[in-house]
Amino acid sequence: MPVPRLLIVVTLAVATTSFGAAAQTAPPSEIASLLQTRAHFSPEDIATLTSGGVAVHSEASTEDLEAVVVAAVQVRTPIDRAVSYFRQLVSFEDGEVTLRFGLFGKPPRPDDLARAALDEDTLDDLKSCRPGDCGVRIGTKNVAEIGQAIDWRAADAAERAGGWARQALAAYAADYLARGDDALVTYDDQSKPVSLKETWRAIVDRSPTLAEYAPALQRHLTGFPAIALPGATDELYWYQEHYTSLKTVTGVTHLVTWHDPARPDRAVVAQKQIYASHYYYGSLAVTLFLQDSRDAQQPVTWVVYFNRSRGDLLKGGFGGLKRRVAESMIKDSADSMLGAIKRELEK
Image (cartoon, rainbow, N blue to C red):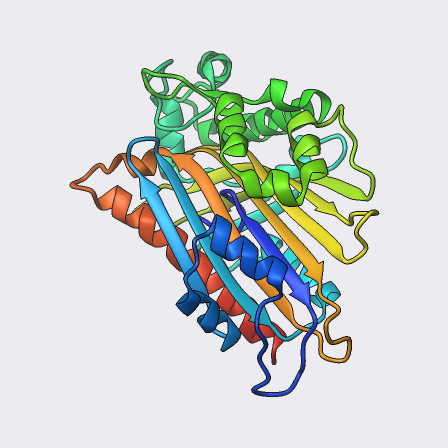
């Protein structure tokens, strides 16, 4: 599953490094304890991190349709540079997986999605959409609305559908900014509806690391916008991503960048998915950067990545192909992302 935008991710970065070519260091006790108690990393995994490698664990369950990945690496770079580069990754368009990305204004407007596009598969899904039977997730109200708004026989039907989609997503983003979780959609593209609000709360309940290491952030994410978070910046962004053999996913995410006033040695970036047109029922990403002062002359950043998400890819259709794709995606994406951060920032 796509990383880092989607999923539950907790990334801890500890700045203390040496720019020496082969200089490596063992994880601080706080990081080692987290990995061993929460992620069940072995002594061999810790040794991999100490030697400068990327360690990754992943699990996927077909029972609750939940996927979890934990990855870690040390990067020889200061904390501010690590935070800045991670935010660049969030908005990076490679043209292959991440096709398009954009920030919503305040308030969100359809023009914020001017670069968004509907491919032929999505247009076909919208054209045949019925309540409880739809190839794209848009909600019952929107199913009825698009059927009335678009004359699919018209020559400009595709343009009208694109305009309708931009308006609907902007309105949804604005509603979320005003009402928080009460605005979250219920996915009813299949016979059994799935509440994103309930799924999101279940993910949080099953994520003790977030409550343990950033309780104020957890309260903000679940109580937004009523519960403020001093030192935090809230943004909404949209994206369109495509993976081989899968449909293009259009999503909306709540991005929080937080500098904890009580912990000047910490910064946190959280990504809470509030909409996905395919595959995902819910996901969260949190990236925590923690400054380690053991050696002020040698800044090192430790990145520890927890990822939890739910979605119907894990149902295992097509002879288990979808499940295998999902399992491989979450593990390979985490490995690739942390490896890319290390390579780029240690140049």
